[in-house]
Length: 313
Image (cartoon, rainbow, N blue to C red; front, top):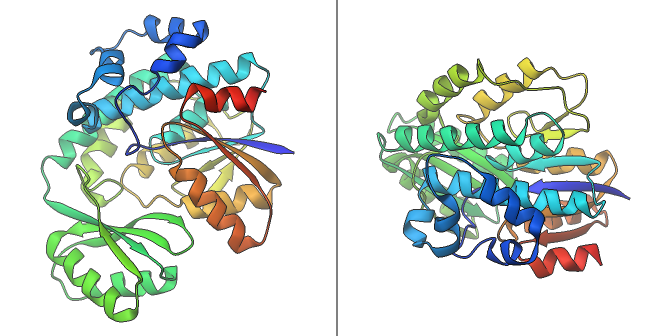
């Protein structure tokens, strides 16, 4: 059995996240209490309010703290990954699990990334919509057709899983693309309540900011394969730290190819996926991709302490 640690992106955070781990596991508690960042994210995680916790600049550090704490407990119980993957900010968790970045640098980078993405997002008025029940070729065709009309910027921000993709861009362009997709037979369109046009060209300022920050951050080659969002492919011990910096800076302003990531992991023999993070969003993506590929995989998620206890048992 090949185990994948799979780290969630923002969007599934909730007030009280991590409190049960904090109360039950000394390893988690000691780690959380040792963190020195610019804000008391522990209080936000445990007490909220949700509106403040859900701000990008707060969500990202909170998710990173949760990810490291749970990973430490798993490793303490001799549960370790053979491969890793994450969605958006979750990719940093995967790199941490692969020994690419220290926990101190991971937290520092994610806090900075969240701030810079929030700053870039505040300068744009965009919309994001999830497209359900349509082949990727058709979604790409619709986006290409609307792009030719010169009514605004539009792109596919997320390739999540079979027949579930996310478009993002200027409001007019998103609305026109939604209309075209309905005509083409999309089963469902869901306008997403997001705080910015993430993974689009409008994150270019965040990309430049990360490039500058990374000049003073050390990234090592991974000690296990990691599927990365920017290419939808695996990196391994032959990938340098400088290569990884380039992948991460491009990732923030480019499409997240998570569906391709899961396909590559399964093709390499992955059959036990453990999602680390509040919620079960990524687990659903994996199940749909595995079904399309006609393979059996085990998928579990760790959102609460009881979830982790079941895996350890």
